[in-house]
Amino acid sequence: MTPEKMPGEVPHRPPPSASQHRMLAFTPYVREAIETMRPTWHIRSRKLFDYLLLHWIDGGGELTIGDRVFTAQDGDLFWISPNTLHEMRGDAPGTLLRYIHFDLHYDPDRSHWSARIPGGATDLSAWPERMHPPVDDPVIGSWCGKIEPGNPALISELLRRIILEYNRTETSNLVVSGLVKQLLGHLLEGHGSESQLGIRHARVIENAMQHIQLHSHEKLNAETLVRQHGISPTHFRKLFKEHYRQSPRAAHLNAKMRTACDFLIYSNLSVSEIADRLGFTNVHNFSRAFHNAIGCAPTAYRAGCDTVFLSGRVIPHSTPSPRGIGSQADSKKGKSK
Image 1 (cartoon, rainbow, N blue to C red):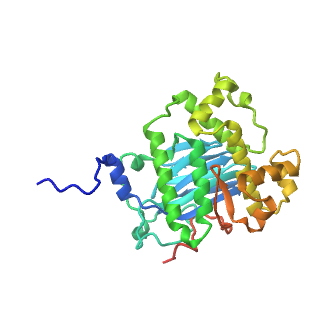
Image 2: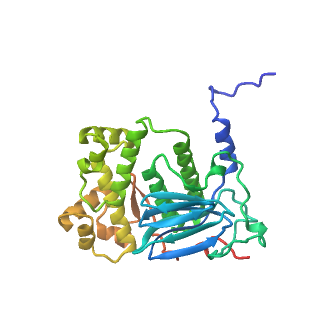
Image 3: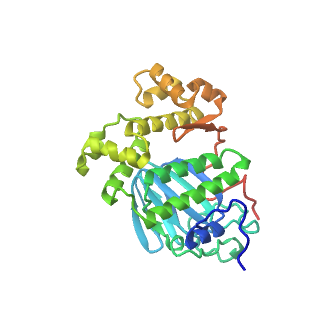
């Protein structure tokens, strides 16, 4: 018997079965989210109870994950699954890192714990109740070591947002979980398909965006960005706008404003010093650009304007509270048992 149609019912196409499975299966829970600058460091071989996603922003180093050895370079992304043997070190003079410790399956009976897993902890069998269960997913379950995102700049920005939201307030748990699901979706896009621009051009454009984000204090020069790839500056600007729906110049200004917001929140630098670091000729030009982008003066923002610039929009935001640096700790969201 055909069920009676609902009022106003129209044809509906459900997501592919793999997407349906993932929407049901994944309920991320972030245990720790940190951006940190570390001097020379070394973590001896160890295993973890949860997942670790590590973005190597700046500096050199080496990681051994399972039986594979990776030389870490700027922009690399590493995925370490639970119970996977790994060792990491960062070279002098230091490394800038973003990382999150997280569960893919939230379980209130398992997920609430805190621990700083030290180097040398290679046998966690005494705490089976803490170990994250295997993931029943042919793609995500196979990730281990260095992974290649389809859009590195977007992944970098999402990790930045996760860290900001995680450190913002107790009520941000659901927001952070949603951002991690978004991150997984984009990582899967990078695994399953390439940009419509074509592999070569997509990589050029995405690497250019990553360079813009990491070097917002430098003068933007399209010719320098694409000279070695055989693309003209004019064609580069056209491809960039098709891919990101904004010009390289707008992306560069957006990156400057995000960096300015971070300086105003986290540093004691004066507005003049921030303007100088970001390459503005004088503080007046910086203040004008900041006001146009954010909607308030830099001094008002620092004093509590409660807005943050994100993707060309102004959204409500509270100043994050600094968090300690560690391997796995969460005094706010976890409970030691």
